[in-house]
Image 1 (cartoon, rainbow, N blue to C red):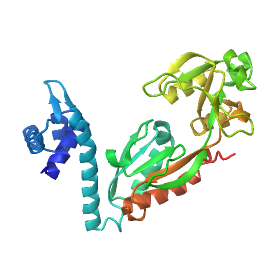
Image 2 (spheres, helix red, strand yellow):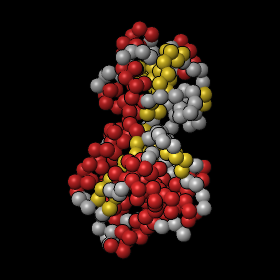
Image 3 (tube, rainbow, N blue to C red):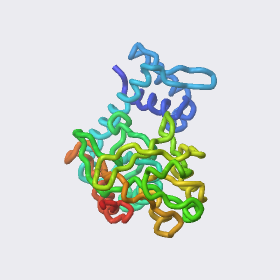
Image 4 (spheres, one colour):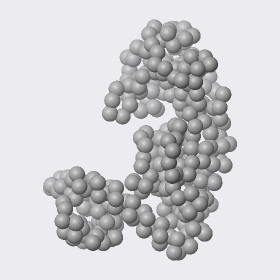
Length: 306
């Protein structure tokens, strides 16, 4: 049977990408880390890691086992926290995830304020533009910008945003403002590459129609994989950009970007805080969700209902 401490060592090695950095993180000696991994692999009768002089990477079995190990350790931490009274007082590590730009603009500052109020809580934040599996990857709370599928998780709605098209006043002065999506082939735009693929196709909804549909596409002389670069390119007058409203709210309010094709914008996208366990959630999770929901509902950037 696998030992819990061996699981912690394995997760640390997988996350740190090596034995030495994992040893530093855990404040163990490198030989102790090596022995723990060897004991774990022996107990499982399976190789979890490929080792070379330069690289440590997960085997296929190790990839699957990592998800299970994270889940088991999260459940153990939760059980220990409950025994210590953490369901009454916020304490322990709070693991959070959100899209990159939302995390930088909104969630990061909010978490700092929460930690100042709860000195027994620490935070681990992962800002990535992909769907993080809460239980499998060991996270307590996720912020999601999308309609949510049915699940056993608890979802707290905090607002909504829209997918919008913007351009700099200088670009519009030189090329004119598109009045309908059919005019887009005459315009330049900044494409944003989806993970593992090409640029996202532009979708619009006809006035009075909630269902977005693919229409004519603009010319894409520039394709990037980060929203911040796309927004900077739009600000510099390189073309249209299609982003979420909260990402450009300040620039639009300051007149540095103009919102176009508003009549064809799809329906708003809901913004939720998502967490497992409902009323049985630890105090740190319930306290954070309450705190974050109140703050986020007051953000003008998340009020895109109409």
